[in-house]
Image 1 (cartoon, rainbow, N blue to C red):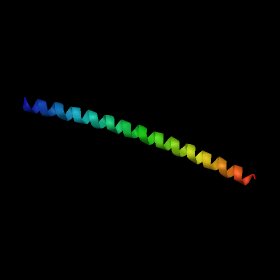
Image 2: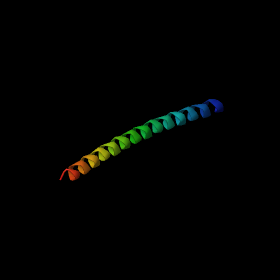
Image 3: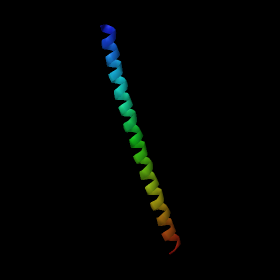
Image 4: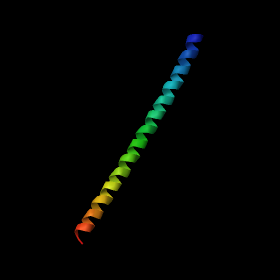
Length: 52
């Protein structure tokens, strides 16, 4: 009985950690997209300055 209860708690904890991992991956993806967008904007601004 005690083993089953502990096992269930551990399974729940693993599930939560996997969910957290997924959320962190999504956060990283969003940050990468934002960084890419900023980089492109910076490049465009530099090109516009060069053309002046």
